[in-house]
Image (tube, rainbow, N blue to C red; front, side, top):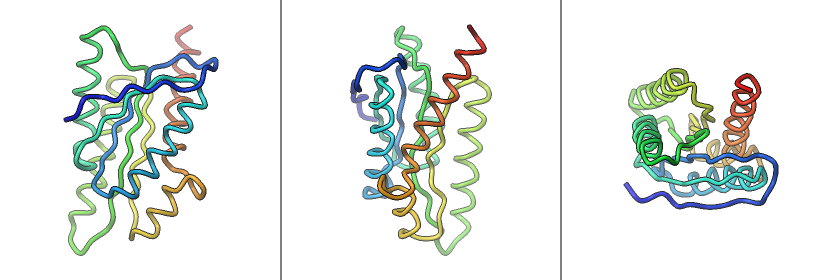
Length: 160
């Protein structure tokens, strides 16, 4: 697994350090999802790290490993964003990957009370995936970042 890429966005009121983990099984789709997420995180003024894992099934484990490591180093993440895509094929592999990656992300989020935006697309074909991923269209990467930030705001409000 590659070292996280630290990026700093524009300065705004939202002080947070976000973990973005992307599954790069489909590069063009992953590029669009990441572009959307980064745009929203930068607009919110957060800092963030981007780490890549091979596919959607590796997202929950990758996030768990990175959260634990960052906390042990004294640089914890405030929230996480998971990005990826699962396209239906000719076998039942689609159901396994889409259901288990979603279940793993949900279990992780609930167990750790982690604000997590799930930007894993589950689609029938590449055209659907690109329409959902493109910033100019449905911007699901940006939506996942916004979901994580919204949950983080909620968490901070009730903990204050």
